Image (cartoon, rainbow over all chains, first blue to last red; front, side, top):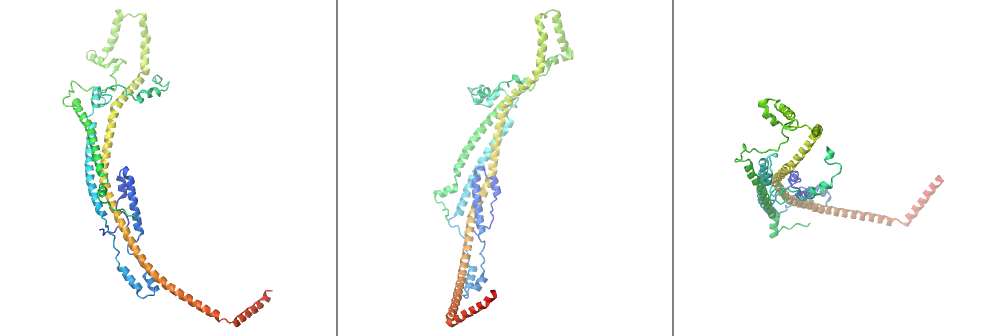
Length: 183
Length: 273
């Protein structure tokens, strides 16, 4: 399944990934990164190839003749089998990637649609609005329906019944700092 | 070590999907909502712009009425300049002033304008008004201009700017998502595969270490065995020799040894005394 042995560092560009993940996925990204890095540390703490054994020392001290040689030959000849992915996790990940890439392309299409709509909206706001000194009451009525400038609105041209219009000016006035004192 | 079981059946489908079908549906609903909102505004503004500034608008007979920032030019504070311009071609610069001087003179001389005691109030009221306007006129003008500007801004300028800001926010959001999503997708799957491969690699290295450890243990066992045998033999021999020696000590030899010790002690004693 995997003939390539991965040695120490990760092939993922974590800085780039951290830069591009949205805020609500930052925690998940961090947990994946920490998982990956603990695995890398674990892998690095274990030997990369068949560890060496001091045969000379054993040859001197073990009295049985030929035992050390026999063990040495068998140790060097022994091929440790690389563990195989028996359950099919790699295939599962491939399927997941295929499905998610379809979803990604669909979502990119939706985002481009909204992007274009937003751009045309900005263009309209830049070009198709009268200058600020040429507005009339009629224009306000028609450009902003549903607001207090709309003549069809029963609250047309009235002060809205909100605290900031009814209470605050009288509540927060300070006697002696009115209009007359500024003359 | 507890291993994660590979999902089967509907759980496998759920794992592959990762809740993305629901997200896509909500995205589509968001797209529809945003597009209808934006397009309604865009259509309305374009239609109204066509009405007010389009090809059917007559700009020559009906020019747009602008809000003037300043009042038209006046002379002496109350007389509009346009009146003076009307006279200019016929009477020159001094015409209106002579008219202003001549008409009251004529009226007073013909007693059309009777200067009675009540009229003396003009001597006070006119200078008073002029003084008031000169002292407070500028200030009042500035205050009113500020109020008008504030009204215009709050009603027209600021709402439009807020709408533009929200549009720009949307553009920025969609752009960043468009740019980032493929990168995150690619790197995330690289990470997933890497975690799998690192786990396999860890298991392989663990096996290597285990094999070496087992062989080394076997060898050390033989070494320890030989050493144990040798030390046992050594110890047994030493003990046997010692036993032989202690057994061979006769009572005669013992007595002689003790006598020798006493003699030596006696020889030493006088020296120290």
